[in-house]
Length: 176
Image (tube, one colour):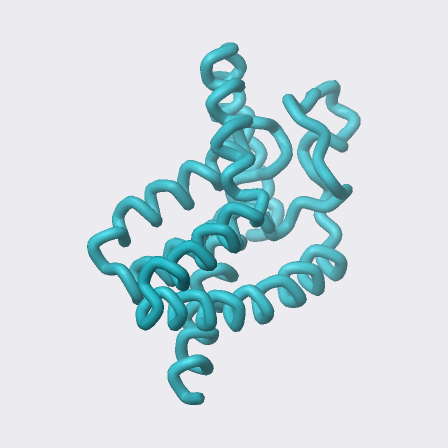
């Protein structure tokens, strides 16, 4: 068994382990709500609110954020449609996800990428909110595994993509 096969086997075991604990009604309900936080519109709403409430730092946060998301989204789509990893709920092993995903492929997680963009921006512009931002981003990513639409490595890849896009977006924003 090569390294990629070993990684996929580990990933599948971790996925089923998490889902073994996540099938209770309270976990499913909270996972659905947490996952919705990562849908994207909340990030824009919070960015605009910060720009209005705190014109100097908030506007910088919003501008850097728009730059970061403008980098993250096409990279996410390129990776997802190039790698084309099937979602765990689309395999023929009888597993049923708690939600219907918006598309067929799972790698990387767009919810995790967007959540980690936002968390990284918070860490840069509002350091006192960094821990809260990263905890929420991790919860958004974890909720996607619990709902049965992503493997753990999808979340990890999304987190790395999101943090990288945010750091690049911040750097580009600062350069101009």
